[in-house]
Every structure is written in structure tokens, then in C-alpha cells.
Image (cartoon, rainbow, N blue to C red):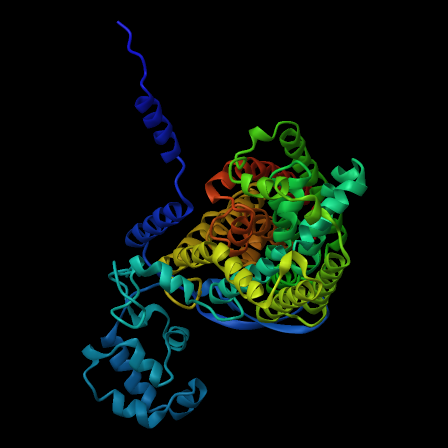
Length: 581
């Protein structure tokens, strides 16, 4: 007996298939939950920190706070009996108190109180911080009978009952400042989205794309490798990352109009910038800081890295073109074919009138070019960062709107400028939320501060110890693997350098690998994985612009990550073989 499948059966099967691809929000929540569970199993630990000076790529002396690898200790309760005896002696030693910067009179009063009620916050007020006491007495200040865990509550806020993992979205969104993740990145995304909402309403970008395609006469395919090298150079020279988001707004419709898909657009912009970052010989946010922390000359081994950048960028561009040409010949093979329909429809529904490349369109594109040059100049010469860049892009959008009003492009009015800005902001609001959600992962693990007890610090220390005693090539490759995995959680290049290099640099001495190779392992791991991890605020911002769900991006990018990892492995092996110094 046979049964004919009904439409409902087929519909159910189709719906079930769709359910197998989880939403980005769902993925991040599962990761947050797993990280929270991990904090129950792994005790918290911390390091003492100190400031070091290093010379950056411009020859300027900078200061960076880094951990001291030999000071790792687990989180314990205080040994108040030991402290009661020692602090009484210390209260009578005026010279020692002056050296520690502690108040003698306040300490004399404090030691007369009940020791069983003492906690670290009270000692901090006396100038006897955990680092100060540990530096003087070692682990004797702790009751080492029980390692403590730093596990978030189920619900709560930092200022009410303590951080709870169910509040990870809000807490993630409000972390940092206007200079960094997450608040700064979220604000940048929204301002850029609004500004490009105005620019897209003018029709200048669409008209420019049609004019380029009409005049290029089949040579447009050469544009993709060239653009890949340009964005890679941006990543290599000034650590281009957040700056890619507005560029992607231009490149997505451009690349789709050429017959490719939005995945190619993200690859030729954001991925290219991270390839450059990974293979950089001079990035002030990665190589310079890592080399400074490792105690080796900044820009040393630049010739090796310059050759590496050229080869890695070329091979990565070739990998992209293999995929791009496959999609150009058969667009239906694209995982984002359906979502790209938005851009294709806009292209197909553009009238002949809208395709005209008028003086107003040209002025807007020239104004955009001028602002982009202004931004690159500001970032490289004046150290402009998120606040300045956001303001510059607002100026770009506002000026484009005024030109459109004057030239009556698409019937633009002042009210249209305002509504277009609002529409651009709303388009990227979902992306901004993801930035906060991703930041929440780090908060659940206890944060990235080496001087604050966290599960993340313990994981970092444990992996560092695990590499002790293995062969040089295996150790170097393991460092590369570790840095790649670590970047799934901590995506800040400078932050990762500050956390990992103080451990990896001396460890490389022990296992017989040069510190130069330790830096190489760091930059390759930190750079390549930024193009994949959902924790990267910049990647999520670019994907939001391209209307690509992270799960669809991951299906494509996981293969490219395998290609990157293979290249990185070969580079590490070569570096060990030639004894890179």
C-alpha cells in the first residue's frame, strides 16, 4: 500500500527544514547559556597587572596595562587569621606603610575591628588592595581550602543584586564607552545607518553603479581582486575594521549589480580587511602592541610579514573569485539568493530616469569620496576613532541630502531627509542589538580584565601551562590554534594582545620558539577568526548592512576559515623552520 504525500505533509517538511537554521539571536543565547554553565565548572582566577612602555609603529612611546603571568592565582576567601596577625605588625611599621601607600592611622583603627567581618573592599579603602597584599605576603593571605567560582546570577544588574545572565543584552549594550564596544559601536552603526539612509534615497549610488557597469564593458570582474587588495591594505596599515561598515553599504548593491551576491560583497570588504590585519607588518592595533608587550622591536621581521601579506592576500582573493564566478554563472546556488532579492528588485525596478547619472549624483559621489579621504586621513594621521568617524559620516549624509534637495533628486525634501535617516537607523537597529548580545558572552565569562577574577582568566592560564614542554613546532602551532579559539570570545586585537602575549611571550622562550613567532601566532589567529566569530561587532554590523543572517554566513565562511587556517599553519611551520627572529 502506498500513500500519497499531501500538501500539508510537504509543507510540514519544508517548515521543519527551515527550523534547522537557528536565528543569530538564538545562537548567541545558547553560547551565553553554555558559558554560564562553564563558570560553574571552572573556578575564577586573576593576575596582577602593571604598565609597560612600548614604541608604536610611528616611533611614539605608548603605555599599555598588561598582566604578569607569574602572578596567577585562583579566587579564594581571605585568610583573616593570618591577616589579623600580619596587619597588626604592619600597622607598627611606618616605613613599610609609606612604601605601600597605606594610611597608618586608619590601619591602626581597622585592625582593632573583628577580623571575621573583614572583606577586600574594606582593605582597598586602606590602600591594601589584593595586588598589594599578594605582592607582600603571597598566597598566605588566602584561605586556599576552597577555590571560588564567579558565576552570574540568573537575573540581576550590576547595581542591583549583581549581574544576571538573563540581562546579558542590556548589560552588553551599555558596556564600554563612546570609544569602544559596545556603546560606541552601537552608536556608530545607528548613525552610519541613518546617514546612508539619506544617501541611498538620493539615488546617487545606484546611478553611479549603472554608469560604471555601462562603461566598464566586461572588465568589471577585475574590480573585485583590486578592491580585495585595497581593503586588505587598509587592515594591514591602520587596522581597518569598524570603518568597513559604511563601505559595505556601497559595495553590497554594487557587487550584486555585477552579478554576484552579498556574500562576495562582505568578503571583498570586511574579510579582506581582516586578512590584511592578520598578515600585517605595521598595524598599530595588533602587531605594534603585541611586539611591544613581547619585548621585541616594533616592525621587526617586517620583510617577512610584507611578503606574507602579499601572498596571503593574493591567495585569499583567488579563493573569493572561485566562489564569486560560480555564483555569477548560477546565482541560484547562493545561500543568500532569497535575501539578495531586495537588492535585485531595487536594481530591476530602477527606471531609465533613475539610471541617469546627473550632475547632482556626481556631486554627491564626489562629496562622499572627499569625506572618505577625510576619514582615512583622520584615522591614520590624527588617531580619529569611533566618535569622530560617526560625526564624519553624519556630515556625509547631511551634505548629500542638502545636495539632493538643491538638485531635486528623487524629489528630495527636508522632511524626506529626516524620514530617510530614520529608515536607515531602523534597518540597522537589529544589528545594533546583536552587538550588545555578543558583548554579553564576555560578561558572562567574567569580563576580559586580567586583574578581576574570572573564568576566562583561568582558561587562559590553563592553556598556557598546557603548552609547556611540547616540541617547538607543535608549541608554535598550538599557540596559533589557541589564539584562533581565544578570538571567538575576545575580538579586540589590542585586548587579546594584552591578555595573551604576557603569557605566550615567556612561554615561547621555554619551549624554544622565538617571541617573534609567538607574535605571529597571535596576529594570524586574531585576524582570520574575526571574519567568522558572531562576537565581532564589526562583522555583525557588516552582515546587517548586507541583510545576511550569521548562520548563512557561517556556512560559507567556515570553509574559508579552513583555508585560512591551512595558510596560517604553513606560515607558522615555515617561520619555525627558518628560525624567524
